[in-house]
Image (cartoon, rainbow, N blue to C red; front, top):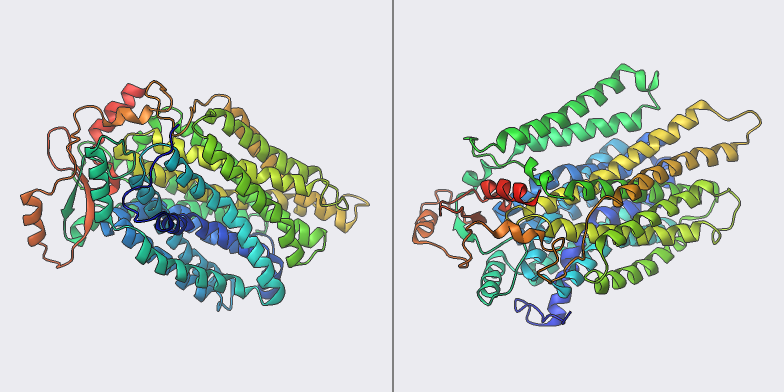
Length: 592
């Protein structure tokens, strides 16, 4: 495949590189923070005098809010503009990490970290939207997404590296203050190096007029409109955001707190939280169906149109990703850190050094994927990735306490980064390319929601499994060390089982080469069907009526948003670029 030129929106390659690194820092907000705090967990536990389920919330608070608010923030980014959303999200993330360092109780710390997670939720959809609107399909876009995919696991590893150094030589609070410094700098870079929404829209228009295929979020059927903020906010599904956030929060709380309750899972408070949490999640699905109906007169746009799950293989790929990252972030990274410090009795700095092979392996795997995603079937890469996940936790599950690091832990960590990079990159590109253009923003938000919630569920479920073993007590004649080893290994066995199921699911999925431009490759060109059916491809136009609308903006504020047009030429709602719901349903039937 011929090399593609640099997008004209960038004046130089250096500017393009800085922009992409700035954008991709969005997916590292959660993983970098989790990694930095991960290595400091024993010190944080002693500082706040907490253990078990309470300790998992140090990590889970940020990932829970990040996952729960992603869909809502995906909608808001279409209202305030993606660059503006990215800038505000980075600043918000830096602010609340600064506050977390001064928290005097673990509950207050969890609240501040949870608020910081909202910054993650705002940054990721904006990042994906900007990258998708910048590159046409091909090798250069593959490389950009390879960098994006690499920032997720590598962010975790770099967090552990910086966390180990900060905890060893400064204090555990220095970890969150380090995040503040880094993302304050990235906020400044965002302002100067990330293209504005207007620049991106003009870029897409010019590329499509030249016949280049743009498969990003802002497509040729979009127009630039100006509307009052309050008018646009009425279309945001705040009810759905509340239901999904509260539902998952109660569900994860029941997982992490069951071991501390007097009667375990049968305790009234645990059962109540579990039942109410599941009921709220089901209510969220019901609400999405209700507001997504054709005859819905409320004007509210669903955060997650249920029709998105009708596209071939998308739901199965999401399930595989969920099981994979339950294994990686929820089990392996959390429990391996505790293993090194609680069982092997090494310092935070030595713990950091033990994760360095992941950094090197991550660079190698990302470079490999960037140049081969268009050559190797995605199904094969998914299978390899899930097998690597399974092997990584299996090695820890079988590992004796006194075995050398190089014998089992080292190959385990090397395998883990192979799984994380391959599964993330292949799945992310597949989700982006498997839905029509009017649903790409929503699909991207759903994908990253799945990643964040998989991390949280993995943390909660792993803690529940380990706590259930711990509550049964030691076997007769079993030493304290052997008892702790068996408790930790139970969590690794759970992670092994989760990824093993995901590996089996890979056998039934159909994922072709990603970024491949050959028209005859059906699996690779499924998203082409989404632009058929009479959608105009005449470029981006601002009508005289649009200009008149902007002059009547009573709020006095100008907002760039994206609005699609249906086949009849009527203006549709601008939220999340899924404005052509009737076309979406037609495509679903065609692809099935």
